[in-house]
Structure formats: C-alpha cells, structure tokens
Image (cartoon, rainbow, N blue to C red):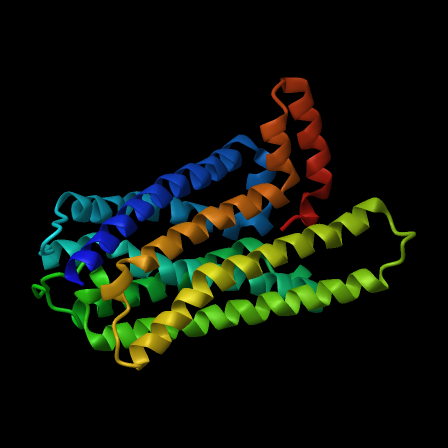
Length: 308
C-alpha cells in the first residue's frame, strides 16, 4: 500500500507541475493583455480580474520549488521530506487559496449588486471596491499563514507526500471548514446571478438593440463560468476536505497535494473564462495588423462598461 501511495504521489507531483506551467502561461497572457490594451487597464470593473490573474501567476511560480523539491527527493520505498522546507515552500498555497476565494466572492458580489441593485452599484467606486476586496483577501491569507506556522511546528513525517500531512489536525479542520464555507458562498452568489439574468432576459423585449441583448448573454456566460469553476475547483475540494477531516481521516495521505492541483486548475479555468468572454482579448488574438487593432480598441472602448 505504501509503494502504491508513493506512485500516486509522484503522479500528482507531475500533474501539478504541468498545471503550474499552464497556469503561468494563461495568466501571463492575461497580464500581457492588460499591459497591451489600455481599454482593459482603464476599465475599473476588471481590476479584480487582473488581481486574480496576478495572484495565480505569482502562486504558480512561487510554489514551483515545493513541487520540484518533492519530485527530486521522491523515493519509491519511503518518503522523508524536510518538514521545515515543506512548510515554508508551500506557504503560497494557503495564502492564495484564501485570496482567490475572497476575490471570487468579490466578483460575484459585485455582479449581484449590478443586477439586483443597479443604483447602488453605480454609486460604488469600483477601484476602491477592488482594493478593499484585495486587502481583505490578503489579510485572510496572512492569517492562514500565521496559523499554518503557529499550529504546526516542524516535525518529521515519514511517508508523508504533501504539506497537508505536516500541519496539525486543528489547522486542517479550520482550513477545510473555512474554505468549504467560502466555496458555498461563491456558489450561492453565482446561482443567484444566473437566475436573475435569466429572468431579465425573459423580460427583455426582442426589439431591444443587439448591444443590449449581448450584454445579458455575455453576463450569463461569465456567471455560468464562475459557477462551474467554483463548483469543480473550489467548492468540491473544500467540501471533500471538510467532510473527510471531520470523519477523522486524512485525505492528504492518499492523493497528495490535490489542493495545489485544484488551485492551479482554478487559475487556468478562470483565465480561459476571461479570455473567452472578453471581446477585446479575443480580437487581440485574432487581429494582427495595426489598423485593425486600432479600430477594435476604439469600438471596444464604447462597450467596455458592460463587460465583466
């Protein structure tokens, strides 16, 4: 059973390394889009999206030493990693998981305000809102990092193939349950957006402009994408960890650092959703010549306010 588990660990390590490369590429592309297109940088409604992409990009790079170390020091007979190095090198995981969940909640909450209380939404300064959400996420991430070290003194754990085995039971309980609650909150907000947009679409007369209809269709696609991404990559793993840990069994010992895989997959999925739902990025990829790009940007600038 130990040899089988070690083989599972090694496969998980290589999967995460591949996901880290893809996450770095996708979110690096989004960062390049923001640097290339002034219309994206000027759109304050997209600031949280840029923060999320930067966070996923930096986490994929910062967590690479953690995964590479375990690949290099993997042993088919017995795993024996340095506990202090594991705890330090994997610290981007709990921090970014909270930051990513907080920003996703901020995005979903902002969209809920836009569709349920448009008057209030127009009064909110989006740049300040984005910075407040980011500050809350960073504070929660730093709090998790402090608990990560405070509750988990470095201790040798033979045949432990992930950082989750090196942290205390108290932290795993807190981490699993808190992330589970945040995941359910994202799910609730996303579902409420979808139902509201469907109701608005049904009441929208067909005589409305194409731009107005596209507004609801694009918001619906984006909200559905957030819902699916949250369901598969945030809520499901968090629920699994919370339930399994409460049952007294450590899932980390079976499948390895799957939380890292979930976080990287979420970063990739969020990046693909943004590229697929934002017309400016699609046109930047399709168009190659200067005149066509200039025309695209000038048109996009008139409609960017409706993009999410």
